[in-house]
Image 1 (cartoon, one colour):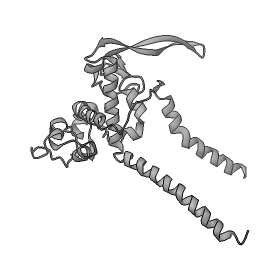
Image 2: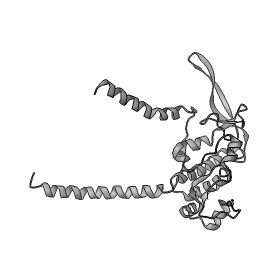
Image 3: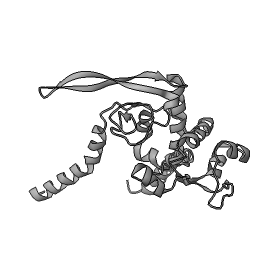
Length: 256
């Protein structure tokens, strides 16, 4: 292989991994493991209610229908309307169970209020990952230099306010001094509760777990079926391999 081809391949490899490097250094915070279980339908039910209560006023989930959630979790229409459907359609009529989960906030209003359209959250768990979401929702801290008064360890200078602050409380950053390239700098060592919320740390972590669990389900509702089918396919291939090998030996026995 000549030098030009090797250089081209090297540059292609570097460009392919640049997004991963950028994501790795973004925020600089330790990402915690999210203890989710998408086979836990009760957790998904609770997470769906948390999503509607705290996220849905701004963020849509436009690729999901209410009745799909009800079908996958065993939720009745009465439960669906009590816990998830609190909106009306453009005609002012109650939202139908077969409609998509569209937030009431319009893109125009979002641009006026926040300067940017609020993102749809249907696929955020696939884009960011469950661990990132779990850590993000637990690492807001007070920062008087930010417009909302809050900042985030894994998403520095985040524009979103801490909508779960009443539950978690207000955290403050604990700083330590490090020497980097001969210069002393202040870095965040950790966070601690400065003003308690309505939940204990354990209760809030469980709340976030359910919310993230729902968002992981939201991003791919068929993943339980996909994994089950994949396992069955692997078993079939293993059995088929045995018969294929025996058949091959039978055909080739005279040759060998």
